[in-house]
Length: 108
Image 1 (cartoon, rainbow, N blue to C red):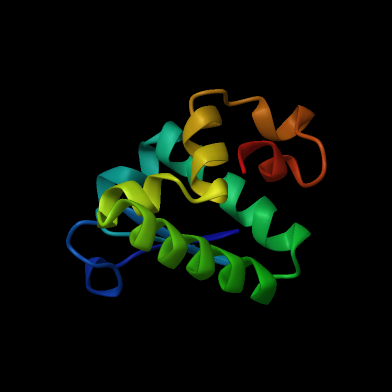
Image 2: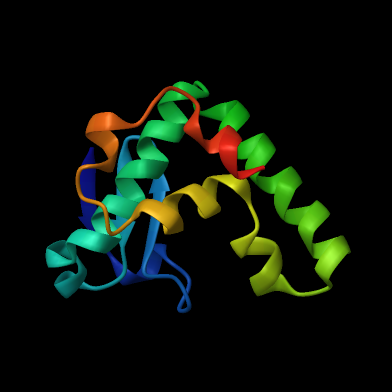
């Protein structure tokens, strides 16, 4: 995992993006936000498990299905299975130590 802080690589409404093996943060202060970093580390694990490219294909597909269903960008994003797992467990800093393989499937 390589953390890079560069606000011009992230949209204004985004604090962090994970593109294996990088976590891109928009603000220097976010380097100390353990919850945000844990959220992004969960995405690193998901991407590794899915061999990266399939992760992004499924992520984008789920987003578009959600957008058609909810007609709302934010709801579509929040209902992506990968995001649901990351948000549900981001505050549990030990989650990745005990997380089982492909745990995101529980959030479909």
